[in-house]
Image (tube, rainbow, N blue to C red; front, side, top):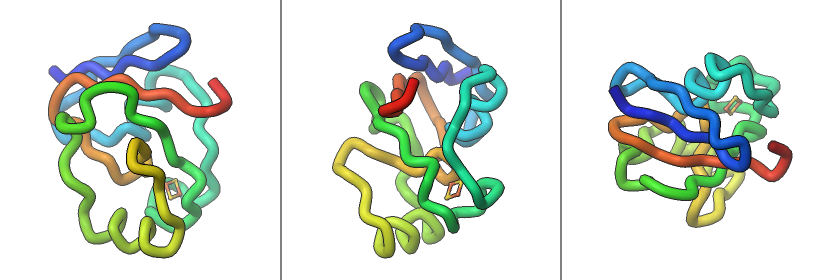
Length: 95
Ligand code: FES
């Protein structure tokens, strides 16, 4: 099972393949800024991928459209959209 690790706490959560970062974050009991219920609208759920960006599925149409409207930095993904296929490490500015 892919493992999502959270910095700076070092906590982690094992996720079924193709689960979203949002799911891992919430199941791990961490807060995540969002106001759209995880449907690629609010653009508040951005996270920084510290390691393993190649172990996230490529952005799908919803994330591409959202990033077109609210651009991401090169190392960021929208947590509600990014699907985990292998071990990754992520953080936010407020953890
Ligand atoms: S939770 Fe709103 S865009 Fe991800």
